[in-house]
Length: 416
View 1: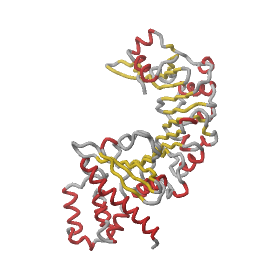
View 2 (view 1 turned 60 degrees about the vertical axis):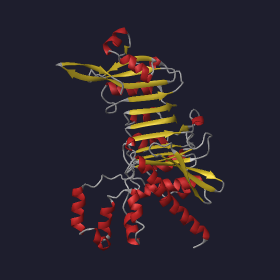
View 3 (view 1 turned 90 degrees about the vertical axis):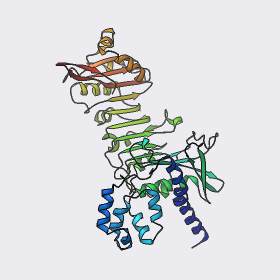
């Protein structure tokens, strides 16, 4: 083995064991079992397991399938220790997926004040093991360049002490690529089955990526300045998502547009919820065929006629199921009369505000207040939309809901 290969292997060992030795010991002071994503084994589970395998004194005699069933109950520090016991144990641990819920890789975050008061080039890798962020079952590493080397930093939390910055140096490597390798390594440890993914990196190094497909990914957030990066990620996720967020560099938000042809992707047309922090070239036809019940994008091509038809579809019972909101951001001077043509409108006058009992004030605080109308369903007159027209947005909200109480039926208004 060459000295370069030896150095690479040594660096990988540092990331795998030094960080998850010191690092895990540190964070477990604050949250015991932070990296034990599986449900803790009960005494009944352990007794049943011992009966099945005849006690741990027979561990070396177990076949690999039995060992994998045991490893599933181990937290990550215990797995790291076990895999160093023997080659067979290493293989059993390696083949047992870790339940990884969410992976984030974000470049050039600016709020790492515990590490530096000055901005610095960096990539943050966050790995979360539980669906509840507040469970504490997560960790965060910050990769940055230090000359020819990569510095990996994290914050050590110890009770009743001030947080301290800890670090580790990886020799002769690029921080950007090392961060991606590390993030993808955790995807692999979870058998590429995480549910959520966030990638906000200007130049994701596709040429070194090991990702083929993310079969269980249901929520993805991607930042890019060109459509090919979006396309690359869409080729690696299922057609049917739960939530989709696309964004671009802040400086490009008002100039760069997601092309119309790309918007036909099933991940966009079929998702029940999406938010785009950029311009999107939806045509009227595409807009009307969306399945999402909650959408937001910077509008380029959707016309007054398209918006009018979208509302009429809902009024006649042909709109998307469980509609919540559609926010079309634009500084265009829309023709209000064309948007509202053929619709029965109820202005937000004093009578409506009195009937809605505080709803209008809540709406203004949360959603802003333009020219507002209530538009009622022809299928159920107790159901209604709010159309809000302002200088920068045409906003449609499903706010009126049928409510029955004490033998009476009425409309209850609330922000979706």
